[in-house]
Image (cartoon, rainbow, N blue to C red; front, side):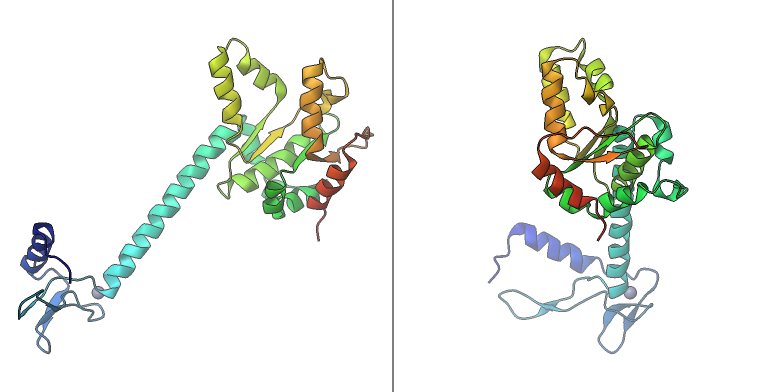
Amino acid sequence: MIEITAEIRAIIDRAAADLALAEGEYIDPADGLIHCKHYGGNRQTVVPCFGKSGYFMPRCVCPCQAEAERRRKEAEEQRNRMESIKRRRAQGLQDRYLYDYTFANDNGQNPLMKKARAYVDNWKQAYRDNTGLLLFGDVGTGKSFFAGCIANALLDRDIPVLITNFPSILNRLTGMFSEDRVEFIASLGMYDLLILDDLDAIKNPPDLAHARIYDRILERCAPILFAGKNFREENAEATKAAAKGIVSPK
Ligand SMILES: [Zn+2]
């Protein structure tokens, strides 16, 4: 038995009082209740009074009102999702030209692009296994386009991606107080995929700290060679073999 608190009583009274016919409603003589003109659904129902004899007849939602509400919510969720995607894209693609680096704009000339598509198709596995991609080769060989296509495809799914490079990270860190540095570095962790596009420098790391960072990245990445340059074999062969599986289409 539900206890009728003053609050519930107020709700019942309000529902019972709101019985003026709105546009598109009629009272069906068969049951004496308010119905909707669209499909005849009930907009009023009969509920027994708690603890005493008699009934009250509060308003209710007819099926087409429920459907309209469902569609309204769906449209709102879609709007929120689009807003979120727009926000993530603005955060993740700091150079405007990257917006146009999409699979739709691929001219099909670079056979490596199928690896980009495979990476996106296998994204869940790549994310689970913490597997990134190392794109290396000369400037102008399509690395940025390759990276941009992956980023845009994942951003379209509302997945947080950041394309950046070490110089701009170091630039941001310069002049920051140490607390801000910790916060900035932590903020890089909120991206599911971080694409660093200047790793050509790995061959000659400027110091040991850089060498360590590069080693960490290399261990977790499947290397993809652009424009026929040789890739120096690194250690971590087992990890790389697993990583390669991610970019091989089934
Ligand atoms: Zn209706």
